[in-house]
Image 1 (cartoon, rainbow, N blue to C red):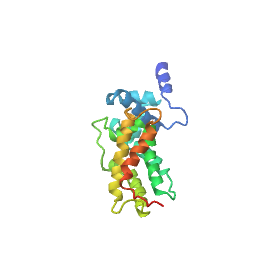
Image 2: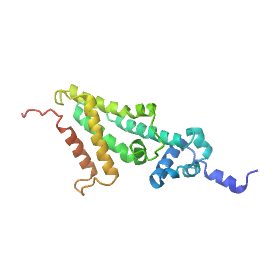
Image 3: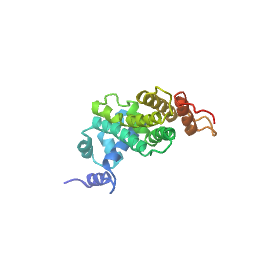
Image 4: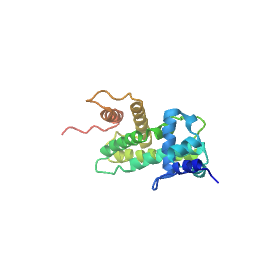
Length: 214
């Protein structure tokens, strides 16, 4: 028969009604990883932080590596969801800018996931082919946005959607990474949001077809 102490501990780890235990565990893993590093990702620490049991960790993820893999996938799923909120308008260049802004918004909303997506804070985790395929979905959405600009005659002749999309992704990733590290704020009149827009515009500028003056 369990002791009263054990029973109280079990009740304390029970997630509140309506809480998605899977997401709670992933969020807790991200916080622990960010604050203390991979050594903090023990089943006991995760269970206590998420308000659940160690058994639920094994049931949902199979263990530590499964949690990190799930964080990787979750990060890209959140990025994809944010990017898909950008709707097509009659201005493809404006839409392309908004895709870049959606990328930044996703990174700032889930910085701990962003670190797992790109920083490899858990060295033993190596994305497999399925992980990498999932990670490239948003690149495909960006390529589509670039192609819309090409089809509308807004980019210079010979521009390739796949090459330009990767170039813009690199520019966005580098700028967001600097911001997350605290290096992008250039003062009250040119905060990170404005600087990010400027950097992305500069990255795209040489590809934009110059319209004749009226």
